[in-house]
Image (tube, rainbow over all chains, first blue to last red):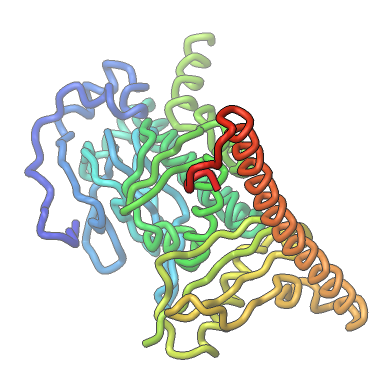
Length: 254
Length: 136
């Protein structure tokens, strides 16, 4: 893990009640969670930290309890775009990046539950429920990547910006984000001027308020209305926890 | 490096970028404006054809203006006469919006004037005296 600022993450602490703050871990049965628990640790990571990248030998899997991890794909000329993001609803790490071509960047500082990817894979082979957890988290990242590709190709800059804001506040359950317009522009593959002009129009329509790197959503319904249909496809029903709970009820019904 | 400010004119609304962008010269500013216009109109080219992006210098003096329909690369395949027609209609729509903004501003001034006249008449009829300076 490479930190970009002097403010390095705190040392890992033991995991207590962690399953309650990550929806994926919370969806596990007590028996399956007790298998994971001895291998879990907790860490707080500042914004801007690169969790994994091609040049880093990193093999942890992260279950955020707060904050947000962006999976970012960069081109040779330095241009980049976010292909997925994960907060309390899922998990991220190189375990899900078979091509090892993307970077994992902490977009918003937060507390993450970490586990060594090899240990997680080993447990997944021994326990079907943990295997389903891995599969649901991987499926969620793939679903987001596909939706983001379609969204980038077919939707306007305004709708994409609104979708990104809506997703962030829905996942993190907050109404205020601390992000610069340069930061958002880099994630959406847009110029900073474009993001500023769209943000000005959203401000005039009473959708958001912003200033000094702070964006507050003043009208969630208006934001949802201004965003694209991808918000529905990437809604709570598609989150990994929903899939896990659905799979567990199917097993119980059998 | 000179600083350029860009103003989006969307219908009757104007949205300025108050941060500005440092660019080497006016040609670089034009290239930046074209890229931003294309990003803003992408996947909604028809309804934004009459939008414009104005570039101002450090003193906020307008340097040039780009009509979105004029840099819409999705209509490159059209015959020149169709493309020109689309641009002409978009420009006329933009000019109509400018005219409506001017009319709105003029109406606002007329309303203010009538409000001041009403206040003066009310004062004179109540007191029978010349109004104080601040009412004029």
